View 1 (cartoon, rainbow, N blue to C red):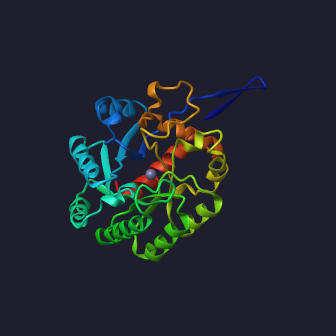
View 2 (cartoon, helix red, strand yellow; view 1 turned 135 degrees about the vertical axis):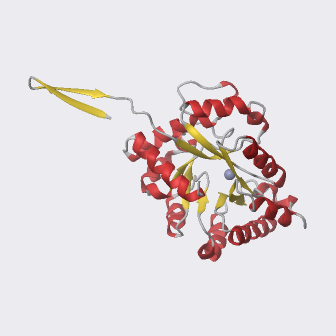
View 3 (cartoon, rainbow, N blue to C red; view 1 turned 30 degrees about the vertical axis):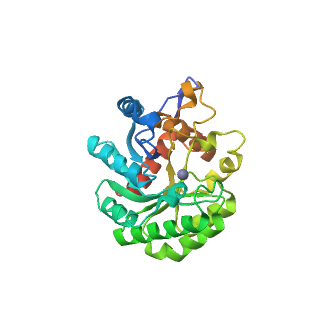
Length: 281
Ligand SMILES: [Zn+2]
């Protein structure tokens, strides 16, 4: 915030540090051992910078169950998603759907996912990724929950599946968006939300997203760290072990605010309201 005073015809400008305000990190891999072993400290440090709530990402049945346990342990601070990541699609068996259904019915499970397609790493066969993605879209429709989506190098197949199911789905977020303008516009056309991570702070890989972020309407933009992955590359001090943490979310907020030419506390308030509406929290 810039304050302007006038004394004896002289104009004095003062910049006040405005507290960014409450934030919610919509994607934290808190079940990852690197975060789980220090969970009290991780959550404490997030609270200190006003990151008041975290959505724990469920990436497999096992990790989704741990995520639910964490929500029970920290009910004021944590919510979670539950689902099977495309990397883990090969683990799908006849028991999986039933297990996902019992997870989906829990109150702390605010979205189905992380699900989607990853043809970059191909850790699971593509036809199995497609099948497991489709089943989870149907699950989200049945349980009337939002979906938390991952996509890498699979946009055409991904958007086709999404298109076919979109009118029955509730809210949809493409988490950790790193794609091009065409992909962004197609997602916005389908009324999807966009999750932005510290990828945007990368001076090389993040260039395209830095230009595009202005085109994301504030009622469709949400922020996430994807911790412990994707440490913002331009932090003033490099943390030990390159470990990304939810406490760096305000840094991502500031970067987006600068690129959108907006005051940080305004962007904070907008993304907070968008996030609460999206996850119904
Ligand atoms: Zn992902």
